Length: 180
Image (cartoon, rainbow, N blue to C red; front, side):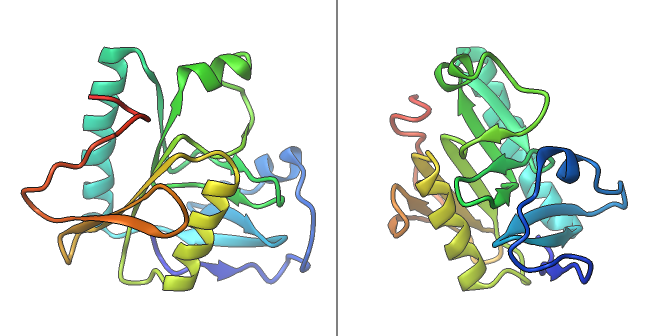
């Protein structure tokens, strides 16, 4: 994802309602809310989009075949307890958790996905990514894959600290979140 930029029209600490967030202009940007500030995520480069599409394709194919839940793309925002709204590059939400919500809501999902996939780009910062991962785990995520395509590795998180490093030839598993 491109380096986020703070919107000048946003006051620090604002609490965003679903209606306000949904009413943002369709100006080609994806937005997140972080600490009450509206962050324009910009658009990603072609290589980033390619990797996210591949991951989404394979994850969706497997999850649908196994009837395990739903895969969302980066247009989907999740509401954190803190008021932050996060939009992972790709994410999985289990059918059990969706059932508890009464199905896929029209608006935003409260809490974060069971599996979050973030694909790094040159513009991502360590602090930005760390804060996202902390948010995800504080709001229900059980597994995070942080993919670094240029360096050809994946960091696997089961908590806000990496628990495994996967390189080409290693097996990247969904563990208990997406068995098999």
